[in-house]
Length: 205
View 1 (cartoon, one colour):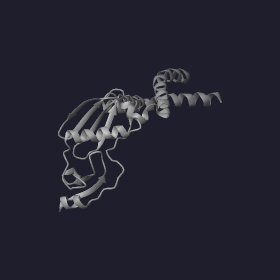
View 2 (cartoon, rainbow, N blue to C red):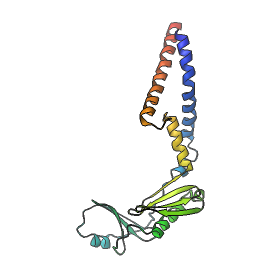
View 3 (cartoon, rainbow, N blue to C red):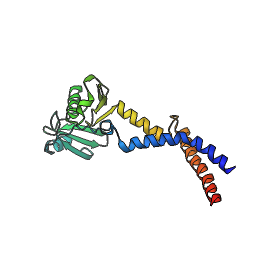
View 4 (cartoon, rainbow, N blue to C red):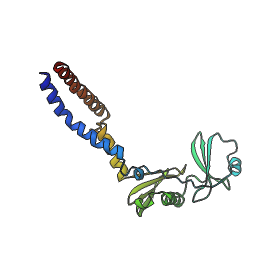
């Protein structure tokens, strides 16, 4: 009986083992990972000063200030109780929400300085909301925060790698509860295969 149980459970376990081995190999080799998770940044090397910004802020409840040079001039990212705001670090004037042209300039500059710039391809379209300016390149979509100048990007390669992670961790249904049960079932199945194998080994000895 133990041999029969072990054999059939092992056959059932073959499918997730194949999936785990293939995705695990890809996670080890990481083909295309560097472009998929390319970190774009509006910041350029350069010194900026806080004097004018401090005067402009006055007694505002500021919790954090970041100064950095950019393609549209030196900026200060100011964190307040109301959220992030951008100021011109040279004049102290408020820059947020960034105009579409300014946000576009930050994104284009960040992509141009990326080691994977060629893989983004041509810029096809620019759109905006109250909080974000979105640039759609041939190879990725780049977003610029209009209140903080933070830049994000996501491409088809990012989606593909995220899909591989979901497959590897048995997140096959898209339903968090069912996926947790599926992962638990996979672990239980491994133990159910292991126990009869140990029993057979001990009996043979």
